[in-house]
Amino acid sequence: MITVSWQEFDQIMIQNIIGVKYIDAKKQPPTHTLPREFNWDGFRETIPITSHSYVVRESDNRVASIRIEEKVLSFGVWDKTEEEFLRMVK
Image (cartoon, rainbow, N blue to C red):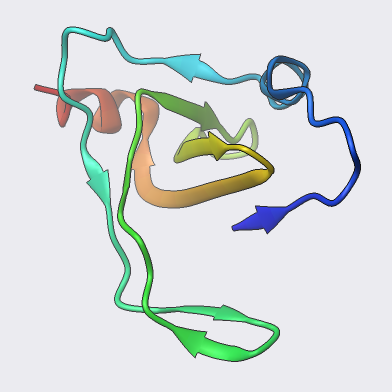
């Protein structure tokens, strides 16, 4: 999870910069879960990410589910290629 602190947060600009792709809104995306995450205050429980938005890492074609809400960017990296990830979509 990344929290930004500047006054204006342009969600569309962020999505364009990181190259967000989208799952059809009529389909159910997979949910990314982890038992805990690390932040500056230590470990804490995570919030599962179920999102129609995702990005693909160019170097190895791995996928990360992306959720942008207000000034928070959350992402969960899958150990799946884009092809494998899209097969999990229902």
